[in-house]
Image (cartoon, rainbow, N blue to C red; front, side, top):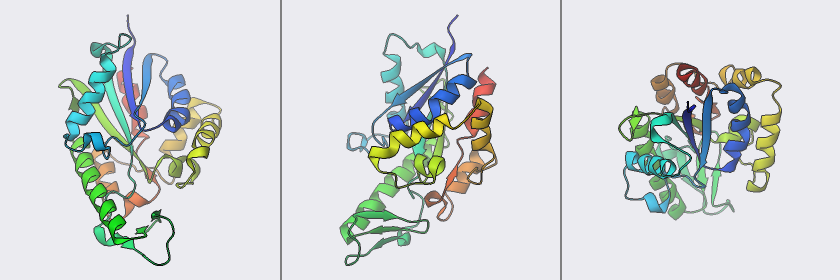
Length: 235
């Protein structure tokens, strides 16, 4: 009998390195597969004209086209996303043409850019991603029958696991490995996400309403802890 298959869609290898080893230990009766996209699918150029559900649906179609996967075995698809300040108001995106050398700088209060053109780019990016997240956070099923949830790290994974949201790309894998190896048991791993100061408590809908409010999408928050109960429901 095939194990129940859980697909976790992530942006990069860091998410897999940080999360998969301990999730695998928790879900021994499950086949947990991390699908790495290598990009933020919601802002990728190739998805510019695609609907939110089409983007997620095409990923599922690609996965299930592989011989090792069978659509009927998929019990849950979880998509992980960074919030990147997506929900802040436009007046929190500030251009400073004179003093900022970096193209874009994130703080816990705003996003600073080095030009009005970059400000417009960030506003457009936020608007695009916000529309996708609004849709998918209300989507219960993908490809008609597959249970679906989208969970977030704010501002990003590094923010939550190491308190270093601006971790250089060259250090991301190392930080992810260090994080994964820091837990003695899967229970400790679960407790970290369920009982930390960044944990957004409440129902799935309530956690999304929270991150969409004010400047919360720039701050250190996550509803990733919801994945544990979702996995337990399947088992």
